[in-house]
Image 1: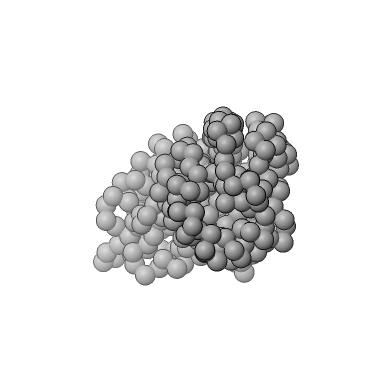
Image 2: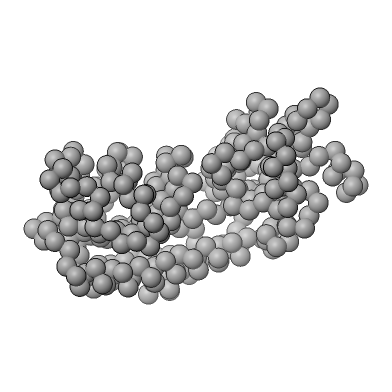
Amino acid sequence: MIYEAVLDDTLWPSALTRIADAMGTAQIGLLSLDRRARTYDSIAPRTDPVMDAIFKKYWAFHNPLWPRTIARPVGEVFLLDSLIPRMDFVATPFFNEWMRPAEFSIASMGANLLVGNEISTNLSVANAPGKDEITGEQTLIFKAAMQHVERAVRIHRELRMRDLDHDTAPDRLECLHRGVMLVDGTSRVVFANAAARALLNSAGGLALEAGCLRSRDGSDALLQGLIVSCKRKAHTRNGPGGGISIHIGPRRSLRVTVTPLRAKGTVAELPWLGLQIPVAMVTVSTPSTEKSLS
């Protein structure tokens, strides 16, 4: 069912529940946290909806385990006990004010599906209260399930990228003379063609900071606003996208145009996977490229 869920997002709760049933665990969840954008998404079919809402509102950004989990390599299965001593953890407000009321045992296990650029996506399970040890059989089942979930996530990302309009496919953009980048909703550059890479490496008006696109001439707030306006649920007065000029020297400037990307809709958006799916195309023109194209 995991692979069926790649095409039908409504099947993910059932797919995760089957993994939990096979393991004999009370809780299971796919969790994605973006620290830079301060956004959190999850799918946790067995967690009480009220407790899940409380976690999303507060504990997602005050969970003492997050800084420890992001230090673990993608795919490595780890126990909660390997992150923090059990006696220390049971004394934390997080355990006493959220985990215990939500009926999570101290016996829990997880693995990262994605770590990088201040984003992490994690699959985790927990036993019911009173079952305070993860068994060897549970670990083996979890490791086997992780292999399939990892593969399903890769397939989903590939399908989402292919779901973009044909004219914005990376292989069609690579050879264009003007710089073109595909960015996600937090300005992370998912793709940059050769011309764009040259511009970013030229110490001009645009730069990458922690993988995110920035302007250097004081117009960064405008650039970020244009990119955010291209997000699917964004509501802006002037509509999505637009253009600005970025100064790169005396009488020289770059013309930057931000255009919203719209997928064909054949593959669902799954925010709790934390994938870097582009929402906008950023096109950069210099006077020389504009002349060559005219």
